[in-house]
Length: 273
Ligand code: ATR
Image (cartoon, rainbow, N blue to C red):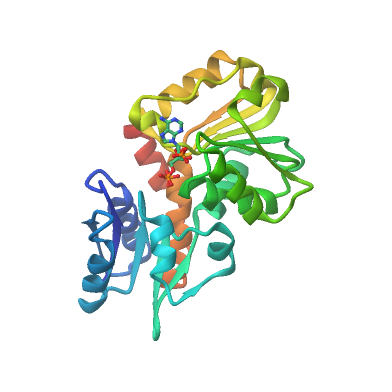
């Protein structure tokens, strides 16, 4: 069987092996998809070992998305814009780095959840690998102005600069949030809840038509989505659908065919909502 893997730390609870196995079964493609646990220091060696064993493709998850970009010989346009890689495709010269997170998020929000993103005034919370992965795709999907806040302001500025649309993308401080009014789309791309430390967010960020989205799922998404409910957000979406859609997008890169995602999403949703 052809070999694929997800590399992260921690990675034991990753749903990616299950998702790719289900896609392979659905399409009759024999594949082996494993989880490789590698710390920062181990990442380069782990990837080299995987390549030496014939690995054809890998997903990259926390905390390696930026590091993975540096390990690639070529990057797709969307990975370059994101400065982050979640999908590695074996090429004759090494690894090509791609990023399917943004496309996965947009597909989940528009197709599965039926949200029209066009002209939505958007707040992105976070400026790490996850935020960088989704910001370009959100802009391309036609959102309105994009405001970005992050605990470390230097990273807010770096992401805003990298997006290259100064008239449309605005770095801000958490302290500015109260004055910014309501947003039509609020995206939590921090890993804060994993440390049980969601930054305090004013209720006024949400209006009647606001969609609140957490890029994580399960217990990690609960604090933000509970805040969104209390703040009156119209739609509350966790990152499970994005996870399945980015996987489908990666699968399409590797196998040349796009799997159907509804059945896999439904079975995971039952267990992880
Ligand atoms: P990821 O790939 O999940 O984005 P990351 O690149 O380490 O991982 O980024 C984590 C994000 O969560 C960052 O925006 C981080 O803020 P900093 O850039 O200031 O580190 C944010 N984050 C993590 N813990 C946080 C906390 N306790 N409060 C606020 N923001 C936090």
